[in-house]
Length: 291
Image 1 (cartoon, rainbow, N blue to C red):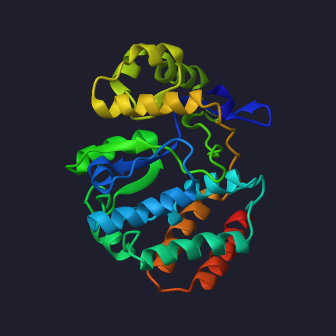
Image 2 (cartoon, helix red, strand yellow):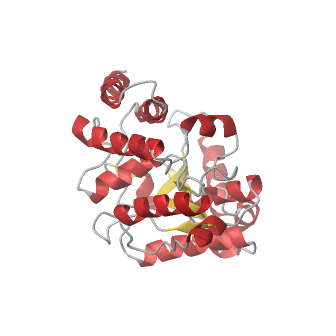
């Protein structure tokens, strides 16, 4: 995990937890539709499952995969690219046009939740509200759905392009301190405490992701079904041996992520054409990287 906080040979942050992308599913709806996600399933299989779920349960199969930057990053990585390079975007307009046009078509077909309903459900997720059967997010966010909804929620594998490579990597929350701090000793002690103290691990659990330090990892033993599911998912993902290295995000990446989600929503609602949405995204991204 230490490598996650290292850029160009310099340690810029100390990881406090790890997570990776996953597909959170409403297990009752998936069972009712007769859909069973399996490791290595393809995007074609996943999209076919969305239609099956919609046909058999009258609930859209997904809440809006096409607007999630980190998921699109995995898809790009499966195809030899990445969302970000060191100084900008790692894909072109044709790539994004294909991704967003596909998403738009599935919304119109009823296989993906209507974006208007997604907005109406906020701050609750449409998955927890029963208006979608699955949603891509970070694996440790699964606790959210259990708290918001009244169904059974579990974690399913990321779809693949070739039946094997998921494009996944470990991400992390990290603690950093300014080199110009007037209290270097106190800052170091605080970071050390948050990263290594076993009692902190017991209190935080998986709120920050799977505990990064060995001491805290051993100190916390999940007892509830959700945390056990998170631990199992991370262990299975690691054992698969397919985890790659995260691409460092260039300055302005947070602005780009927000633009990706917002513009994808506008496109899905039909307030802007796919071609215009792609043009707008690349324009806003260029501006963000120049700031």
